[in-house]
Image (cartoon, rainbow, N blue to C red; front, top):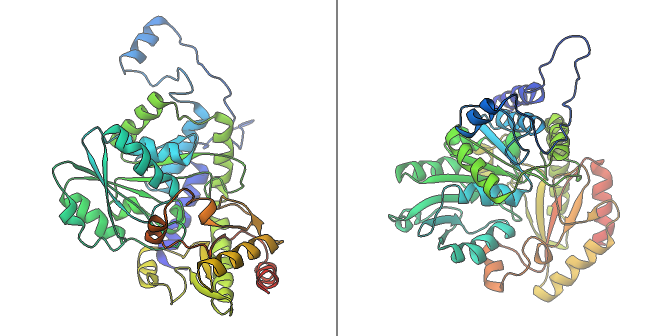
Amino acid sequence: MKKDQRHSWRTATRAIHVGEEKHGIGAPVTTPITRSSTFTFSSTAEMKRWAEGRSKAYIYTRYGNPTLTVAEEKVAALEDAEAAIVTASGMAAISSALLAVLKAGDEVIATRQLYGGTYRLMRDIFPRLGIHVQYVENDLAGIERLVNKNTRVLYTETPTNPTLRLVDLRKAAAIARRHKIVSIVDNTFATPVLQKPLSLGFDMAVHSATKYLGGHSDLIAGAVAGSQKFINAVRQMVIYLGGSMDPEVGFLLIRGIKTLEVRVERQCENAMAVARFLEKHSKVARVHYPGLRSHPDHALAKKQMCGFGSMLAFDMKGGPGASGGAARRVCDRVRVFLLAASLGGVESLVSLPLYTSHYNMSAKELAGTGVSPGTIRVSVGLEDPRDLIDDLKQALA
């Protein structure tokens, strides 16, 4: 195990216990669910202190809740951050983090290969708010020529969804610092187990906590981690826009975080076995997995990450029509893998990005993300790798 991975395990231990360090007779081992929309004050004087910002009392769950506080402390511990906030969904986390630092007239520089929901937010909604977005490739070539007096944010994700390309986080953070712009990265695919963006210089890391942090396909959640200054601003945006998390979801997220490390370790092992099988298959044109030497960002993955993750994609052979038909047949034939749109759970899933994460995108936009009709995205779970390979073998036959 690499040194960084051992550090990650120590971080996970801290995250398991943070917020729940209770000792004594009758103390609960797990975090109670505080199912209350509102909270009482001891007096009107205490209410006045809260209104003046001099009290940390809970007042209303949209503003804060004891269960959610524990979840936030765990996310902060995982990301080695000063603070964190949990939200109602991954898109609530992404939009709140961006809008916390953007206003009309500002510009964003974003890497072109983004999760489809993020891209559509920037393409369809930001122009209506007077926010302009410029795009750069994952290698960041020419990025500094795009920076101007209105540039406020550098936004990226790595590994990318769905073709698992990487962005050099140290390089990106250094550019952002040099130009005094805010750097935000979507760390969902890597998880804090495999990648620590804040330690590499980023200002904020966002997550769809629906995925690996929750890990059981039974919640919708998001999270943002960063400095106290940035998280305070994001929290205000969540309060204003209403993207707050439900306390019961907070409880499920806390539960999921406790097994994050062991799940990710097993999923990474399974994904490598599946990727190696697919790379040798006669009907597969290309496998997108940073753990393979054939992946263009393999060297960067070894340098930047503690492991290669459990997401991969592969392209079927043939032209657009033939490969698209073949991809649909594979997805229709799998039995152990489930045909579903999400990722990061204990179950292995396949999906067609063309109809899920990257729907409603033009042929030119799809080409920029590396998605074709023959692209199949795979989220590898905890099943026996032999069962997963046998299932793909029969589906490809």
